[in-house]
Image (cartoon, rainbow, N blue to C red; front, side, top):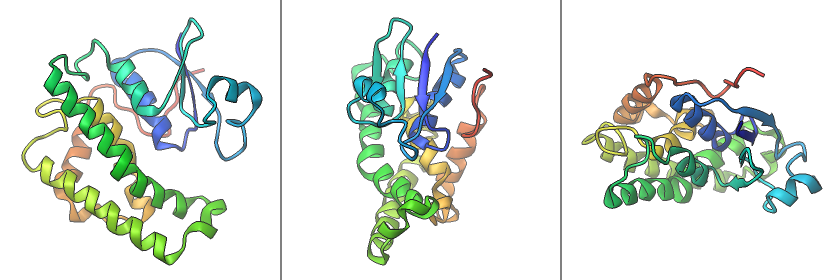
Length: 205
């Protein structure tokens, strides 16, 4: 059985759990955390030298890091990953956007807000910059979602799964989603998908 090594509170670690739930596939969860040093042990670093989670471990022992790479792997052969080359590239485009513009600012600001050990880094300048840049990213999403129900067009893809976790938790970082009604409607559509599970969900042991 597949094992996902991840941190329950992390949006990046939530992505593959949510993907597996939507696919109806069983998996094991192994709790590790960048906060307690468990991703910096020699054993973990041997499998992922970056020292970050999530980390996907296959039955044959192979491992795969990076949340969006994991989503693409898990989505292969399913409706969540388009077979058409252009549609697939468009999906990847939104996943790159998620990492380069969305997560950097929205998840970054949440991290500075909710984790006490990061309080010293939450300077007024940084908080203002991440708020401005995060709202800009949400604005890009809002514009797209006024013309399409999902980031894969008419059906959800791995891009939607990539963008969902840190958008849903954006208010924890001080973002007001009321200013983005199309984004709010999209969040509700994701949450109504068969098999959807919230961030705090873990598979039965």
